[in-house]
Image (cartoon, rainbow, N blue to C red):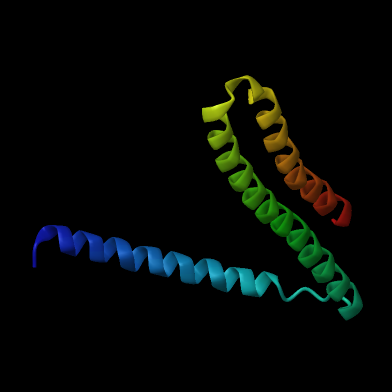
Length: 107
């Protein structure tokens, strides 16, 4: 067996053991007693915050993609409207900022 494969096997085994130990210690620390209602409320807040930001960011990405494509096409015809095209892109990007603010409010 070439030397490179022996070293990579040792590194892979070492990393696997490290990951297993990290998971084990995380499970052991997660055994803290928390009332069920509080745990459900915390989980609901985190899921809501994640959805608020994730969906807003996805919507902003789609919007910026569409606006960017239209702006490039429009700049070919009318270069003097560059500021308006930039404004439309900024408005689409503001959706992600609103989602980020809502995630902080929910947390």
